[in-house]
Length: 140
Image 1 (cartoon, rainbow, N blue to C red):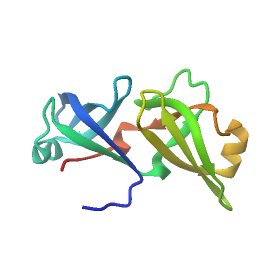
Image 2 (tube, rainbow, N blue to C red; image 1 turned 135 degrees about the vertical axis):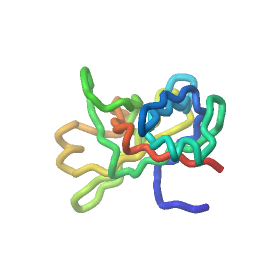
Image 3 (cartoon, one colour; image 1 turned 180 degrees about the vertical axis):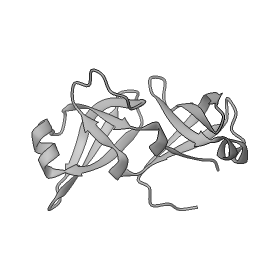
Image 4 (cartoon, rainbow, N blue to C red; image 1 turned 45 degrees about the vertical axis):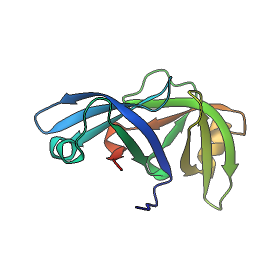
């Protein structure tokens, strides 16, 4: 299967917290990084998810927010790292962050104005912010 989603983070399910309709699925994507997805209970069952199962977290670049010096925020997924590249566009820029946990990176599409306001440049420490509801899970 080929998909257009740029951010494809391989991980292992570490826990599943089941609710009445949705489940909160936590993945370890490195020794230091976790990512949480909120998926329907039906999806969790259809994918056969359980602790120890390998999965892929899919996140559209347009669903990634970038922040600097994050103190308090409601989004569950805060992935810290360093900007490794910025590809400039006419209106939006593509910003890639190499995660501190090593090996993985995450790409965001944000406005040029935001890149400027945040002072982003190669080497800048930044945090990728992703709501748990924006993380789609896939299995091979």
